[in-house]
Image (cartoon, rainbow, N blue to C red; front, side, top):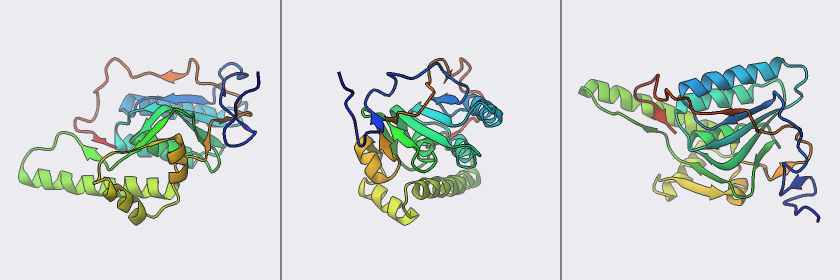
Length: 221
């Protein structure tokens, strides 16, 4: 039985049908807390330095998390000396959408049943004295502008265009399926190219038991 194809002959609906065992260049991201950032950076740097790794693949299946850490991961991808694929598995929301959009040109993918969600940065734990509140509000505004700027650049839009799209949603969550995400500019392809030689099996950066350690009021995207 022939494989059903999406988009072009080089992209398969069943991307794992002939994939070999996991190689060090595969990184699976589910969360954006400090522990997962540390694990991501470690694996990413190892892949960068491994002569046996020709391309790095970042698999994203996440509801999002700390915006600072999402920006850090996106920077790692952007400035990699090796080609970097980003792939959405099921969901790439918030900081997950930012990371997905950071893949190198022509190497951003989503499986057909994936959903991608973008929105403005939000902050947990607002409180304290008035001057502390105002300080946090200023920090949040700056972080939100930086987050939207990066997402807009990765999607081929201006910040004004992105903010206008969010305003139409009354600045609520903008959830898109794979096809809509491609039109939006977050991904380039639906499905996976035949020449990906790695899978995420056994490489998952699982959320550690001590989740919550670190920043008390994380800024979430």
